Length: 417
Ligand code: PLP
Image 1 (cartoon, rainbow, N blue to C red):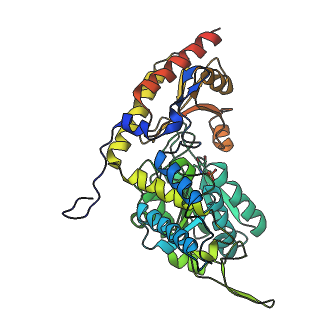
Image 2: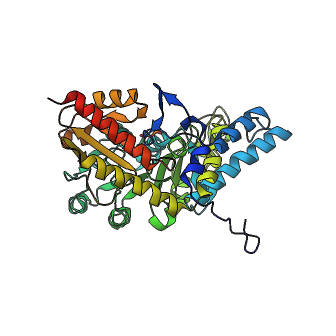
Image 3: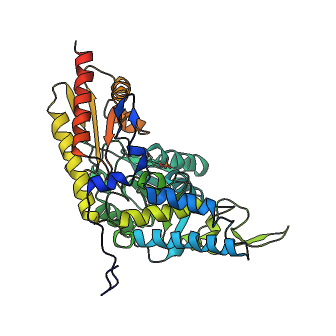
């Protein structure tokens, strides 16, 4: 803390110091030092998160909210503090707007099963984009099957950019909800959220943003964006698995029916009827992932301890460097070439299948992802079976990019016709 004005002083960004915070990075894989470039799937955890989890399971652990005893009070306090940290992290107005869920997938299913079931009638429309992860497609398809709603899709260009004119054309008084990703997990495209949200609101639609690939790479301010819902996962932002967040505007959450019923989410229960707790508890039935939420709070603290602009610059430089080096290899094509991208480089080789590329890179200790990245409709649109994807985190380095490029070069040699 800065004693004068009590503003936390950001830790200077030094990638080698950051790497020392992540024990899992320092291992050999198949006889090579690990190069971990599968961060969009899940990121490694800093010591601060691991220690927090260990501490709570070792000492201050108890069930939350129900106990009168010391440990329950301490654990409940830490759980609620974590909610407050997450609220500040995305600049929510009120910690009651933060619902702890299992992850982005559960957050989106929650909205589909509550807001969606209440407001979507036969013939009403839900608008998604061609860039979406399956978790921002399938829940809406299921909702449409149940309600007679209609799913519409905003097209995407060959470069991976949303067709905003088509989007505005598709919006109408029938649109109940627009659900789009902040950053594409397959291509890295950053969507122009302000324009999308303002246009959707102009026709009276609500907007859900899938922030799974965004919230740790760039500052997110849900009030400034004015989105109605924002969903993300702890495990992609250096936090634990099995914990994530649904942000929703308080007035919307208050008016939504609960989804899952059980303990924690009720006010009173009789055999005739039950009444429900206030938000956020109305949406947190059962014992929550207590230590997961507390660990997520530690991840938020960790990310927030840095100069975030410096981290974003570093990640952007890695992406640009990888794009330049890979893009110069004959027989390799970068997929997703819009100017506004975050932390992801997807590519295909003329002569090798993405699965072969991923498998061979693994032999050199380089972890990437290969396949459709849970975006089958996008891959179909781009006429691809899949891509190889390198995704960067704050702990990756330029020399790791060079190892990736050298590894891809070896794959090319093997498959040269
Ligand atoms: N949305 C996007 C853009 C993603 O990248 C992912 C995971 O890869 C998800 C949603 C689903 O996240 P989770 O599996 O943590 O629920």
